[in-house]
Amino acid sequence: MATTTNYSWTTPDDTALVKDGASAIRSLGTAIDTTTKNLNPSTTLGDIQYRSSTANTNTRLGIGSTGQVLTVSGGVPAWATPTSTPPTNGQSQVLTSQATTSTSYTDLATVQSVTVTTGTRALVILSALVTTPSPADTTRCAMSFAVSGASTVSASDDYQLMWQGNNARAYYDIAACNSFIVTGLTAGSNTFTAKFKSNLGASATWEDRRIAVIDMGS
Amino acid sequence: MAITSKEINLTQLSKELGNKGLVADFTDPKKKLIIPAEGVELSDSELKLAIDAHVAIDENAEKNAQRQAILDRLGLTADEAKLILG
Image (cartoon, rainbow over all chains, first blue to last red; front, side):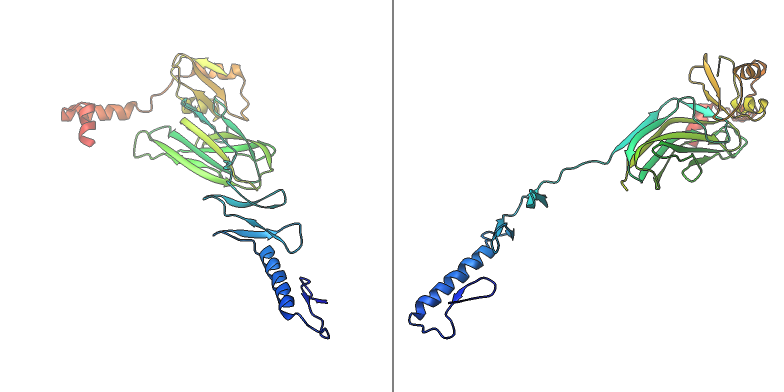
């Protein structure tokens, strides 16, 4: 008896004297039916199938629940509910009103820092209530941050929350906010420290200042 | 670092010290904290001497006087003027 190339279904030889054709056809049909069912075990809407450890035999995988995603478990596909893992983050807030006349970036009286394990990128959000110093100048009050730990980044105007006074009014204060995506960090534990300056050397005051850092991976 | 209850004009004090950057916390008026900014070379004794000699100028005095004169001319209090100006 001859067999087919892929699934080894038995067929009569070309030279065979077929004396029971119905039986031969039934045997072939049964073999095809069994193979087809093994390859397509689906029974229900949404079923999918994947190859099992047995050749020419797939395994049926019923549809998962709403919101589930296809993942791998034990080397085979499986539906699973995704776990929600928020990115690593941290923030620091200092309410006390503190001032500086420094024209280069400096800590204020209360050093303000937040340590976060990051990849090479992080989102940094700065906010504060800023008061410009005196009636007759246009001092720029600037808040930035330095990074230490796994990375070394100096405070700079590239990452600056800045408020400039307006000499048309005696005093000016404003709640200001700015955000930055910092790239080029060295992945690891990074400490972000808020830094402040006043470009004209006049007293700039900061109150309710916050620095928040959110890891953005690599 | 220095702690003082004196009236301090931080901008003025900074200039009196040769434009050296200062950091301050005036939350407690009886214990005003003043420290040199990062990278500023200033000893505690130099800072204390400067504070002792410091006579704070009220930069708002002149403008406040002008405001009061206008209010007096109009016969309004500061609160009434604020109310009108919204």
